[in-house]
Length: 382
Image 1 (cartoon, one colour):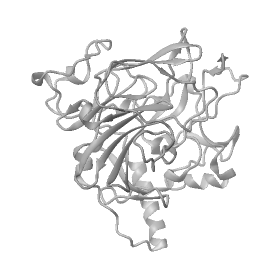
Image 2 (cartoon, helix red, strand yellow):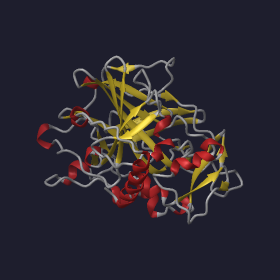
Image 3 (cartoon, one colour):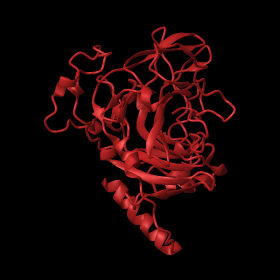
Image 4 (spheres, helix red, strand yellow):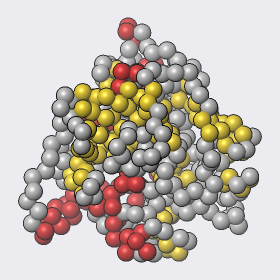
């Protein structure tokens, strides 16, 4: 367990001792780990997975544009929920202590690039040409070994639901989201970035039925049978810069009001989140998150923070900001996993009444319409 998580765990243990909570922790069923996703990060990525504990060392909570604490008063995983004392946390923003335009090292997370498993040929995880998208799966003779470990822990949240449904939400955090280009102008940058892949299971059989991947303010749902797999584990792809998640490598177009743009994925470093994950169970009706027996000391307080994991959108008099046709260079950082509709009935992320299309195969890419980030409040992204 990383040092910052160890420190948080010790603080959490003291808290739990004071409340005399003797309720046994739940196990993570083995089938959840057996069918966990493998994530291809982009070969030319500049902003890699990050550790939320380390992220908190580089930000100061602001109420809108006013600092709540001094920079020296660092928030951590066991006290982040205390920020909800300020207007219920809704307008609290974890604001970078550095000028993000200077690209401080902690934003990039380069040290968290997944390692290459022993014996793996580097070409499988690092294509020599980042534009060689390898749109067909590797042949059996060149099929990659299981993915590597990242120093940035993934977060697994397991939710049991009626009708024999178990949802395994795998969350991935990045300290920076690099927006895409429109007419050679970049829009939609933000600090803090939560993405997720959901594997839905039949609780009785322990077999996966569906896979959902988050993409900006929408996402795509598939049957388990439809998606690419290594062995029996689904393979998903993280787009360069934005980290939107897709079921295939290649270009993924979508539309903003001011033009067409696209995400891009390829078979870059293969990340196995099971190798370093903090695992939880969540009662969505009671809004109760608990560490699982697999990582019993994992803190939970951070989950209840109601605010944003990055800066509020910069005003137009900030030299880092510009706006065109209602779209902003920098938008607001996202809300955390608690706000990703963990109690959803349909496998899609939207509201219960929204349509949910489940694909039974990997179809040719279709252009999707996205209204764009605007100033952004980050509720839906990821």
